[in-house]
Image (cartoon, rainbow, N blue to C red; front, side):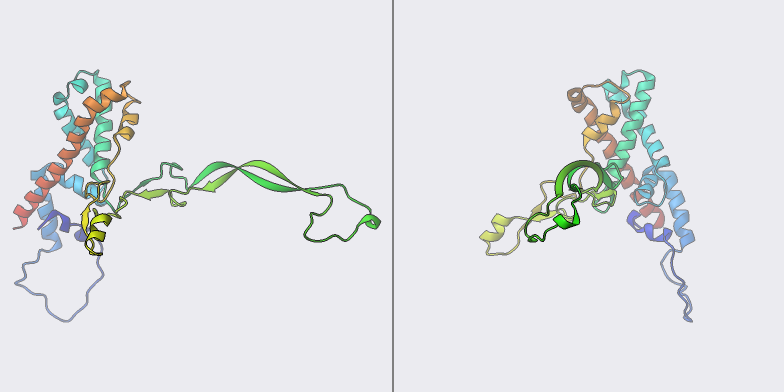
Length: 270
């Protein structure tokens, strides 16, 4: 049994009423057996199972981030820049790195993130110009004359007015979230137009150069750096040279722990 198949056991199922007896020689695992296998695999695989369950939305990410923070403390000795920090600043920086490393690990083409343009509000405050009708002085009834409709009426005037209004956010369309999928729509492949035209219209597919075939956008380190600078006064160039490799190491550890959990679950259930 693979790790990717456990999600269906946490979803409610409709009752299947039939008069056919249940097969007694089936190799399919019952829900009780699956839960026991998950418990045993979780004991042997560390935080890999917690990471995956939080990634697919079954459990809260608190336990996974806490376990990732412990891994960051263990690996901090490999980054001299972080290991030489004061203990309070070091703990805060490692907590930030562990949180953002989990966010980068849990991203997929189907996941969404908060819209950066409207900060999750769905609307933005914009300054616009509107034309307001200003009425002129009242005239006597005897002075009123019929005029052509293609000419402006006397006494009325349109004046531009500057107003601050709540406008719909264009990037998210008012949904408050935007998709993490790449321009390839999560496929990881795009059509090479030049090669396609050379072959007479036969589509030639290649890896998307924006996402390197992943199908989704990774978390920008500039976002991580902004959070780190709230606890540590570090320069941008210095952070990209010394802190970013450590951040990438934490993301790789997440994938390694998931692979270990997948291996342990397959050993337990086979």
